[in-house]
Structure formats: structure tokens, C-alpha cells
Amino acid sequence: MYAVIKTGGKQYSVKAGDVIFVEKLGAEADSEVVFDQVLAVGEEGKVKVGTPLVKGATVTGKVLKNGKGKKLNIITYRPKKGSMVRKGHRQPYTKVEITAISPKAAKAAKEEE
Image (tube, rainbow, N blue to C red; front, side, top):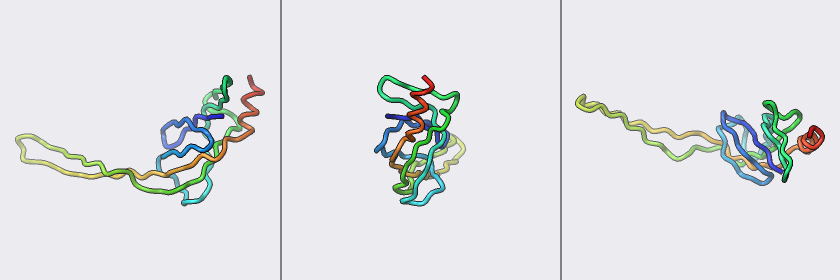
């Protein structure tokens, strides 16, 4: 069983046991997080796509850690002006392991087809 979830302005296709890196969530390490914005739920051969969300579907995950990504160096250069600015940026993230896709979502997907 798999699901497509939306978090942090991005969409992720997940299965139970997957480890994903999402935009930083307000959750501590070793805590549980529930994604309720589920766009699609499917099994082999059967897919339920929401309009825009699948009713009653949830995806549960465990927060493994919070951290920062690799440093990006941004250089702004203006030719013939003698001006150059260097900046750095590290995007914060949350590492989440998907533990379960709600069985109600799977049941709802089968019933509504």
C-alpha cells in the first residue's frame, strides 16, 4: 500500500517503512507525527484519488531527527561595479520514517470504488 501526502508545499509518494526528508516540522525527535493531507491512496491495481484530499485517510510517521542540509554558497557579483556579496544557507529539515498508512484510508478506497 502506498500514499501520496502533501507537507511543506511538496508532495511525497510514501510506503510503510520509507524514510523521507521533509521541510522542518515542529516536532521533537522520537515523537509521532500524523500527515492528514493525503492526496491519493492505493494498492496494487486500485487507486483512490481525492478531490483534493482523501476523506479519513492519514499517514503516521516517527520523527527520527531534525537537522540542517548541506550548505549552499550564494555569490552575487556585479561586473564593473566592484561589488560582490557572499552568503550561505542551510535549509532545515525533519527526517521522518513512515510507520503506517491508516487502514481506514484503505477501506475507504475500496468502498468508494
